[in-house]
Length: 239
Image (cartoon, rainbow, N blue to C red; front, side, top):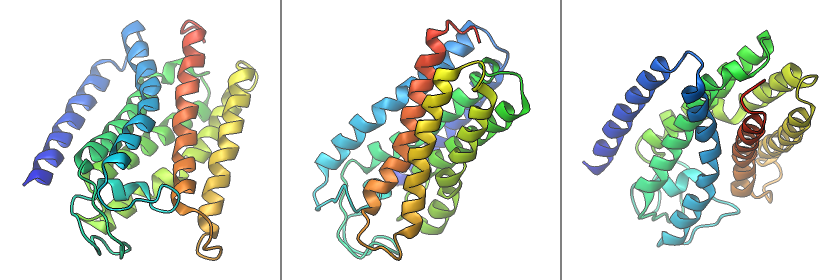
């Protein structure tokens, strides 16, 4: 019953957030401020994950275990298809809420900060991709791996890939008007692309630290969005 309560509450929060986005869809100082704060708040993820890892009562490998293990709602072995090892994360509810709110923050920033980008098609498509990244990531908190592994996995897959074309398209849109942000984006694009490529090699090179690579894959996007929001803020919303 506890999982159902959290899932239903997340859906209610998601609907409320969509309503807020709809009401604030026209650019103004309030909508821009909310968008900037949404992306800056992504940096809190790292603190919360550290708290959840510290609270685990079964051994947890930061280097080798996926982030999703921290959101598994049951304790024991074989909690989902690929988990033959022991998992016990008492703060799974906090981790799942963090997944959900992180995705929601990404989505809100993608929509509300869109007016700050140059008025070109590549920026529009990139904003859509960033929004898809947020939705994909947020769903992983609503559907933990042990509740429905297939849905958890399939909905998370876009969020592992779509950020790369989004960042490339943003780079195309801003390379003349915002050179510093362009180079920042290219650096983060390189990092997340290398992490994804390494994850694809893991079935062959089994010694690669999958947990660490997954964290780099997502963390490079969070850091990019946080840095981008700070960069946009420093321009006084005047792009």
